[in-house]
Each structure stands twice: as C-alpha cells, then as structure tokens.
Length: 346
Ligand code: NAD
Image 1 (cartoon, rainbow, N blue to C red):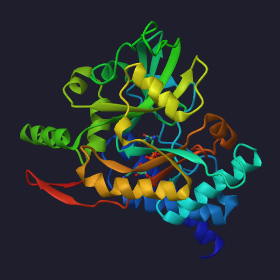
Image 2 (spheres, rainbow, N blue to C red):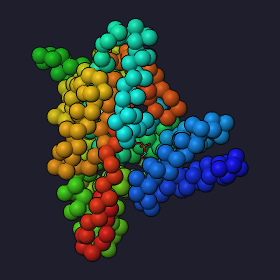
Image 3 (cartoon, protein in one colour):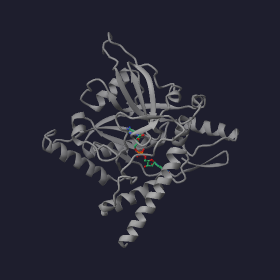
Image 4 (cartoon, rainbow, N blue to C red):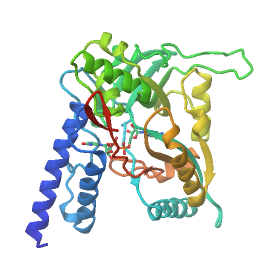
C-alpha cells in the first residue's frame, strides 16, 4: 500500500470503529459481532504500530468507550476507568509475562529466575460499573463512559439485589472489618443466560425490543431512564476492582477482593486462582475454556492481573489500559440460536 492508501485505510477504520462504538455503547444494539469489531481494531492497531506518525490522541486505540449519553447526568471518575490490553494467542500471553517479568526484575521486585504471581479471574461479558460508598452507604453508581466521565445510574443500580446499599461492618468480630470513609468498588453488571432467554421471550411476547446477547440486555436494562424498568430486569453484579479508596490498601489484589467479601460485596471467589508464570496462565485459560459452556453466564475470556500492588504500581499504565493486566479472549462463539423465530447471536 502507498502512504496515501494507508492513511485512507486508517481513516476508514477509525470511522467504522467509532460508528460501532456508538451502536454498542450508546444504543446497546451492536450491528457487527465482537469478532468483526476486534478484527477492525487489530488492523488499526497494527497499522499504527507500523506507522507511529499516524497515531492521534483521538484514535479509538488511544481512548476508552465513548462519551456518556446526554440522556443521563454525568459523573467524573476520581480514578479513570480503563479498558484492558488483550491477547488472542498463546504467544501474546508469553510476551506479556516476559514484559512484566523483565520490568519487575529491573525494578528489583523479583529475583532472577523468580516467576511473577498472577491473580486470574473470569472476564464476564457485561458492563463495567463504579459504585461509590461513603461511610458504608452506596451514594453513587456510574457507567464507564469514556473512562473519565460516566453516566449517573445510581437509582437504577440501587434496584440490583446483589449490590448492597450498605456495607457490612463487624468491628468487633473475629476479622474486625472496618468500613472505609470512601470506597469506590468496580465490577461488572451482567445477566445469567437463563434469565436472558426468559427476558427475551417476555419482550417478544409483548412485541418489545429483544436483545442480541446477554451483554447488551444487561447494558440496555441498566441504562434506562426509568429505574422501575431496571428493577424488573434480572441483573447481577460481581466486584473485581476499585477506584478511590480512603484507607491504605493491603499488599495484594487478592487481599482486596477478600476484604470486599467481608464488606458484603459479591465477588466471584470460586472461579479465582493464583498462578505463576505464563505456563500457569495458560493452564488457567485451558481449564476455564473447558467449562465455559457449563457456566451460568457468558464470559468472553479470562483476565490476568499481577497480584502484588507494589508491582502493579511499578508497571503502571499505557493510554487506555494497565500494563499489569491482560484480557485473554476466547475465540468468538458465533452460534446462532433460534428462539421464538428470532435469530440471535450468542
Ligand atoms: P474489553 O471488554 O476487552 O475489556 C475491558 C472490560 O472488561 C472492562 O471494562 C470490564 O467491563 C470487563 N471485565 C470483565 N471482567 C473483568 C475482570 N475480571 N477484571 C477487569 N475487567 C473485567 O474492552 P472494552 O474497552 O470494554 O470493550 C472492547 C470490547 O467490546 C471489544 O473487544 C468487543 O468485544 C466489544 N465491542 C463490540 C462492539 C461491536 O460492535 N460488536 C463495539 C464496541 C466494543
């Protein structure tokens, strides 16, 4: 390709991706599959790596999601809500582990020959949410939006049964859990597969909007102007991260999730695992891949996070993602299910 051809292709890819972003994040109605979207994004990333002079700060490769919809009040995130770097191939996972190990070894955080410890989680296919608790009370909930500013969905989130309105405090109990002054909990709002099918059946019976997949059903159900509609939708939540926290944090990612459990927050504990090295990461990926079909909810991959917070701080961030974490995606599942004479991609 000549230089003008490359520039033209980069522009076309950016326009297409922006269009898909609006359909997916603002209308909760994607018009292409995630695999098709990921291919466009990968092509753009690869052209930008080969031609760094074409990278612009507003390229979709440098930004997260889209600006919040004007239908909602906005919330400025005190700590940005980022995306995740992703990998599809084993080689990319090995390269990630090597980058992490080299940096931590140079920083003196691991010894030569020592493997990095990773915390492995499922990558739930829902939408990210930030819950702000002040003195134990849920005061605000926001979507990720463009990472800096999200949509205020507080009233809607308060209708989700698994999200506590008040954190549990047991200052005199055996674990002496103190409730922090400020705690922003981050996690995923999602819908179980069986609930999704029932919801779509009901929607079709009433000639109302049917959703393409559980992810879009969860997003469309949460991003409602009337919280009474959200309240009728079977939404669930798992916490996997945090934003602003007024307390000193424990040393490992794992310890923070255990603290969340003590505070009464839902955490997907039974699916978590601590492993070492790329070999451990691949074993986790294979194991989850083997039971993916039997899970009650959709996942689109697994997530690896460097467990030690000191190491996370050393690794830091690139424009739209942390360097200490990686989403390892499963191959696309383009199964077409016939349900009430409607074609769905699940
Ligand atoms: P991403 O979904 O690849 O990864 C980041 C997100 O993972 C987080 O925001 C969070 O919501 C989620 N997540 C789930 N489990 C997690 C865990 N345990 N720890 C941390 N995060 C976890 O990136 P993205 O920027 O949110 O979205 C890009 C993806 O969305 C694309 O790869 C594509 O699959 C999909 N997409 C599709 C279209 C389309 O038109 N089909 C358009 C836009 C985006």
